[in-house]
Length: 234
Image (tube, rainbow, N blue to C red; front, side, top):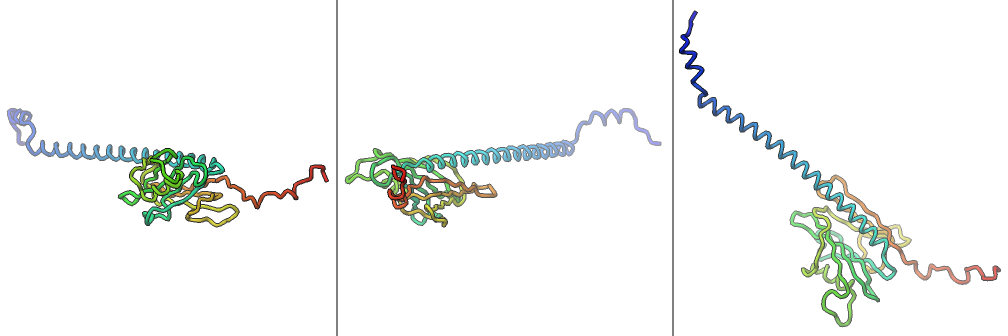
């Protein structure tokens, strides 16, 4: 049986790590650190995506509430009009304008879809008051001036961003006592129903919002005096 002197074992205990062993340990530590970083980065990215999606949903809910209030509380003099800017930037219409088109003036508001460099759209809003800008002769309503400015994409308009990265926003309109939906509403009369569809980038399904617009019943549909009950009960 082969034996080693005690001095041999003492040298083995004191010799330390070799260069190869240190390099292997360093490689293992780098691999572990990389794995931990990737896991942490994935968790952070997932959290950021979830938070971003939730923010988008909150914005959609807020937009739905805003449109429901504005369209449902339109005054008797107010009008609604859809418009298209140039080729529509891939859309049948870029947005809608709400306000007083004729007669007494008042503020006008446009909700617009502007194409982004990535192909998605930004929903934005702008309001024009009658006293905004220099006076014109003959006087022009804020509604008419805003329609001209949005169709020209005038840079002087101060847009408020509503939602980024929207897929194919689309408006539809339904006339009073007519079942068919229209993709455009080019005249300043009032539809009975308005439908707005949008899909946020990353969502699997679009969101559809439906709004009722108070409709002015034509005078021809009013009850004639001859049909009203007589005051004496006959």
